[in-house]
Length: 121
Length: 278
Image (cartoon, each protein chain N blue to C red):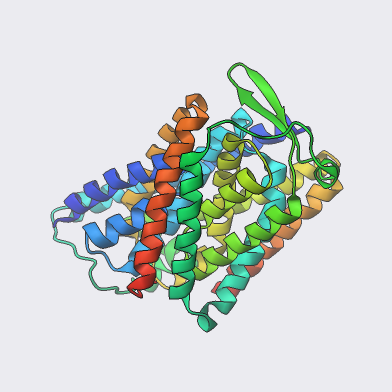
């Protein structure tokens, strides 16, 4: 493992992450527009969506039933997970390079990320 | 307006947002938020959720190319992400106790000054070849593609850059927007990193800072699938196009585009601050 190889790996991870997220959003979006594309919409007032669009379990269940909103939200979850996975990849890559300092730095970033995410929900 | 019309308008605007975001390292929020709120009358909470999605999509979409081509510096990005993520936590913690209007106005002034400097800059990359002592120990120096060759560069002033990055993170925790601008300024001005490396490394970093705040926005329902869908797809296409253009673009041109986008952000910040909308 060297820096060039690590860059290629991280580049590929990001590409796979965004493309699979985009595929899910595209499928869900097409289904949504096919069913309700002609309906009028307004977003002037904020009304939080149902739990099935806001929690991990709800999104998973909704996507498993091939509901369009659930598929879009699942795609967005994959999108959000991509930078987090990138930090983990970097930590492993630096460990394989036997670069202790940057393995530690990557793990600190990962710990802060997880703390922020858990604290939020 | 029908769902189809709304989707098509948001998709088009988001394409522009992703393109500019990938070119400047600022993410797409500068374009997405005012387009949704002012043009389409969407509630600011949906716009904030959409902005978060646009930042992560720009970051990961463009970074895929930038990292593989060897523009983004992974070590610099990782080291400074400690500062931005800690800053974002601190910003979110103090958000309830400070006047965000005042902060938005002050931040707007800072950005106005940064835009002025980008317009006046001669477009040359002043990056020194030698790193200072700490940056050598941290192995931050690297090289990046210029034409067909790779040019080596050094890095200076990690403590200064680290502090400004903490501030950038805190601002993104407080205001939810605009941290990319300070990231580029910290790397370009304080750490003397070449402009293309600064913007692409900022682009690489903003996704992680945004992901840290994603949980909150998702659970509160700010990320609405019907609004986020065209934003994500449009931004991604725009970011892919932007990453192709950056590789061939001249630094002088990129600085001008950066200056224009930062100036827009400065005006947005001050107006929102003065009207008490932030």
